[in-house]
Length: 260
Ligand code: IPE
Ligand code: IPE
Ligand code: MG
Image (spheres, rainbow, N blue to C red):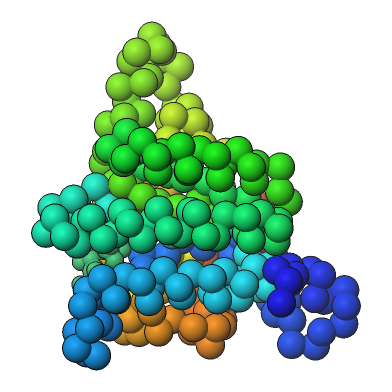
């Protein structure tokens, strides 16, 4: 199946196309690989492999809904504190994913990005990521940002250091400027943040960018988060009323709702 956008599906007359409010940017905390494996008496590495394989099927599903940006939290700055064998396995899986998937994703028009630190990864992987970003940079399909060695606090610390190093005057610092110094510069803020495996916490993910994101948490473990679960999350988003701190979502003096 090609990664047809929702708009294309509507054009082609697919009646099942979702035409209600679709989030432009979905970000996912892909959690629960370990518990998924434990329930099956498998190793945690098996769980991580199953979780990685799941990325392919849900990517198609989000693209078909018309989502334009998908950010995937795959490894946090705190995940280095896991046992060495698990960290090594996660890095190996990342390497395999870059080698095996990049060409296919490129053919499907996917644009790849990375958010987080690159400098602590093995140099071969750094190069693999940079090459994948370069190869796909002109693609017009869904943008997939892999959050690997990503932490919101580390991102903000890094941004402040760069702002100081650039000699920016305090009077020039505003929210827009800070946004330009984040890993996500050029990307819209997430509209919907999904967390699998039931936890109700943010775990250092997109701390700045999530200011007005809608949250969706499900008990389903990440490897089991299939197309039906994608449909449910998108449908739940469609029922939300975003207000941005305003009364009933209306801007003072404007009769129309900001969500149209
Ligand atoms: C998410 O699954 C993957 C990473 C954080 C790398 P977990 O490994 O955290 O799975 P649980 O939370 O132990 O079930
Ligand atoms: C969040 O999951 C990070 C990723 C999914 C990569 P964790 O499993 O690391 O988060 P905590 O430890 O439950 O907060
Ligand atoms: Mg976890």
